[in-house]
Amino acid sequence: MPKASDSEVKLQHIQKTFGGFKASNDVNLTIEKGRIIGLLGPSGSGKTTILRMIAGLERPDSGDIYIGGQRVNDIEPGKRGIGFVFQNYALFRYMTVRENIAFGLTIQKTPKKKIKERVDALTELVGLKDFGHRYPMQLSGGQRQRVAFARALAPEPELLLLDEPFAAIDAKVRKELRGWLRKAIHKLGITSIFVTHDQDEAVEVADDIVIVNRGHIEQTGTPVEIYQQPRTPFVADFIGEAVHVPDFTIFKGFENGRASGAHEGIIRPEFLEIGANDSEMRMPLASETGTVRGVYFRGNNAEVDVEVKGQLLKGTRSLEKPPLHEGDTAKVFIHRIYSFAGGRTEILENRAKRIDSVII
Image 1 (cartoon, rainbow, N blue to C red):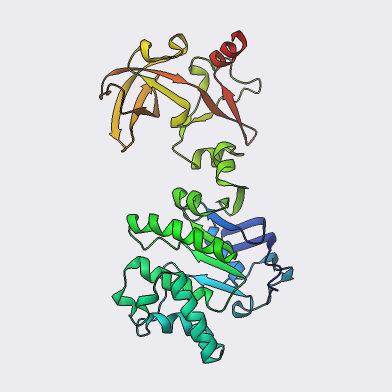
Image 2 (image 1 turned 135 degrees about the vertical axis):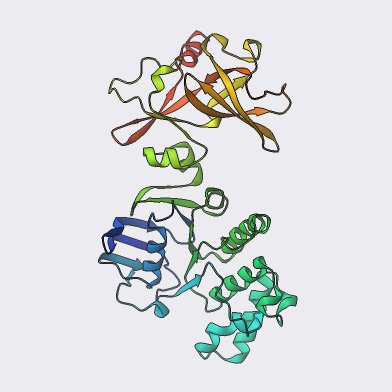
């Protein structure tokens, strides 16, 4: 079992194949002690396989897994010092909340006094102090997930793994539980790794996000780094509300393209300024004319789809401005574009902004 003083996790050159499907393709990952890591990717990307190999529920075909500096490839799951929270809670329905939380300690034959003290502390931590004698079916989905969280923590693991922990919970409770979970994990200081396909979930909970695609890691970084500095076309396309543009040289300010000849790119909603007419635009001469194809109320603003030169772009517009309607003519200024070349991304600023900044 890893020492409490060192819970760093390392995966080195991990390969895992199921039949003809390569679930992990030379996966290399280092996780610092005390960090909350979100494994984010589309279905079938290999993120759950990584989690299960760390837990010992799957064995890599090759490569090494280290927890706390110890190679754990041949160590059985129960001896890796890991707490695991399953997507479907996996609670024992005929056991009370307290009995569920105490289960692991009971199996370890922990003294009853210590079990009681540990369960008391955990029911307090997860906000279920007054629910200890209830059964799982008497709890809400969010409360059940808190019990599963407490049960995983009961044996005092050095590493916590969570497999889509909010998937079975309704949207409102899920949002509340995200903030609670992040605070609880940071309070404990336990290294944690969770799997999700929900971008909002990853951004709100994780200290660092690992983007997984087709069995390999595309990028690792903080939520801000991942969003603002995508390193590959996949990350730029996968994160946020991105619109793929086959040839960005059709737009004003980007006509010259790149010397490499790569003209493929991504445009995000925040890269656009959308106005009803020239008077609303800061740079009317550099703005495109388009047709509104859809307007959607989003609470604090309106999401607007505008067709410009045959390309449907997505942007936002303040509700304080005169409303746009489907079929209206609109003005669009594209501030920047993510350009692809050689499997990498580069941010291109509109030429009009560059010229304007020189004049100023």
